[in-house]
Image 1 (tube, rainbow, N blue to C red):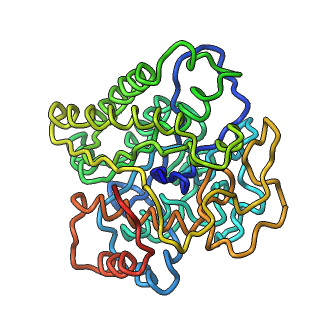
Image 2: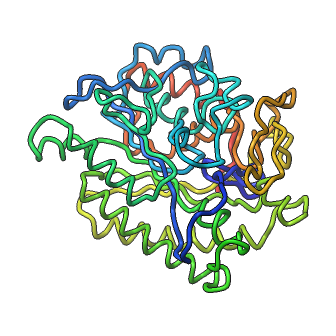
Image 3: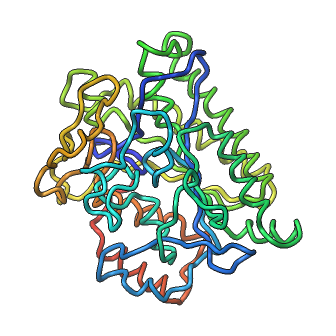
Length: 385
């Protein structure tokens, strides 16, 4: 059962959607951008991530020193922390039942609680949640973006690093030590290529051609990020969206949609090759490709239905209907809504990705790594490719 990166196959939650506003036929990538930063580093007064990844397990993080100076996140709604709350869009998750298990209630995360980026940041030792780019105050330089292009997110990144104190060489040296995770591709398939009623890409390109175009654009954007100072990249493969409940509903089936998953596989295969090329060309760069998950432990027994009651309208496809009571026993569900995972799945994914990123932070002997090791040993088993 294929799954998605921070989404996951039959366990694969993907990205959100809204009524398409695009008028041309170009493939697109939508993303958010935010970071976690050590306090006092390079002039940032940034708050990092909060609460416990598993209440008792990660309680020691409160006094931990983060394992890296900062953590940058580029991605789609699987990683969103509220960047689209003020945008003109039908994709909203800042009302219940979203956030019912999150310390601050609904924030714009497409989950009942924390998402995968939250889990990764906590495992890295960051302490408190940060505001999204869209609502951050001027003095809060850690930020997020919204449902906008990856190119715009690169501009946001450039703006952020321009506020760092120190010489250009000092800033570059600082950024070289930061982890960058990027999750792209999900929207390009489920909200473009496989929406022929709105986009012509499905008729203009074969899956192979479409994948080539996306990867070419992606490599240019990653090269730009490298120019801005990034060196350590965790690149998540697009999720096998054909196993998301919303996609199975679109295709009127109760099994994974092979047509969608095979197209995603074409993209991921080409992306792996492209990343190897980038690593050989971009000075000092290291790329870790994070495979989409293929399944979870039997504890997540409900893999094909969302926990919340979802909309069947075109505008709100697959999203939780506001203020409706969700399922009981949500710890058994892979999907919270018809695209996105439950907090339980996100914590498992976060632990898996954190482990995959270990070459970037090493297993230092400090409170953060000790707590992370305990969390990794206690979290549900994950089947990896």
